[in-house]
Figure (cartoon, rainbow, N blue to C red):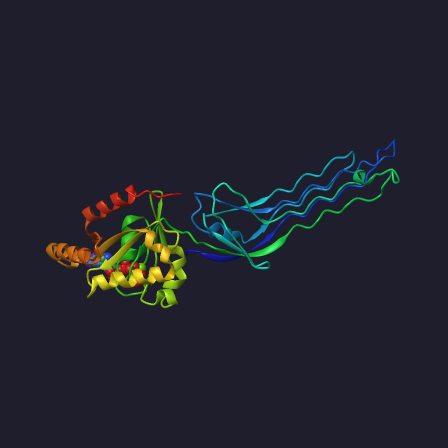
Length: 319
Ligand SMILES: Nc1nc2c(ncn2[C@@H]2O[C@H](COP(=O)(O)OP(=O)(O)OP(=O)(O)O)[C@@H](O)[C@H]2O)c(=O)[nH]1
Ligand SMILES: [Mg+2]
């Protein structure tokens, strides 16, 4: 199951207490400072493509700072707790209602800051008090609950009306084993598959009205935003394939007009159900009506699948 939305608890480490100590002979103070508490930090990592590991753990607790010691020895800093997520994952701090989007690799985003260590008694000596008998306690670390939403699941998104053959194609192009059946809404959650380094997702349930919340589409449209290339599947069984294409495009653009700029490969699927000549003519007709190129496709046509794989491997993906 694809986990694309979870709630996690995070707790940063408490700062270590400052120490109250004195040099044995000279009587002067020598209490060291407490170490800082560790923070809970999130980073985007290229190899991480889902939230499964984060969902398994759920509680992210950083280490407390160590207490200060005599002879001005500082306590050690608590270790940070680091979560790794895919790029573009969104964290909403539920208490503060603040949103952080993890938009860069190699950058640390602090979810919860560790508490500062307390100062040891040596820091409090003054002209009037040469033997301070107090030190600061460490400050508590921050503690928040976050909603984590996966915004980016794939480089390529398979779109199209229900029953267009999206899952079948995903299974052919990758090692995915998505359920396939001869009726609409077989896929209820996006399936993922890896084609080499490239991740494909089967976006289920796009129908007319999806951008307004009809069907399942709306729930999954968020995954489309970050996809770099669409494989738009239109079944040759459709009564009016050109209209079918327009319906899906309309939903996409109503959801987010910027999706217009995404690259798209249009596939006329299941063409083994018609003759090669009919397939050629239909693809040409749709292509002409829409002013774009349409590739006839069948999961039983090894050559067509190889051609498509070549196209997908040549596409320039930006990471
Ligand atoms: N003849 C033929 N049938 C196909 C082809 N591709 C898919 N099908 C059949 O079409 C039906 C629907 O296929 P799916 O892959 O489940 O379609 P989908 O677009 O994922 O459908 P939803 O998950 O409901 O949105 C199944 O019965 C498939 O076996 C094809 O190339 N040729
Ligand atoms: Mg499906």
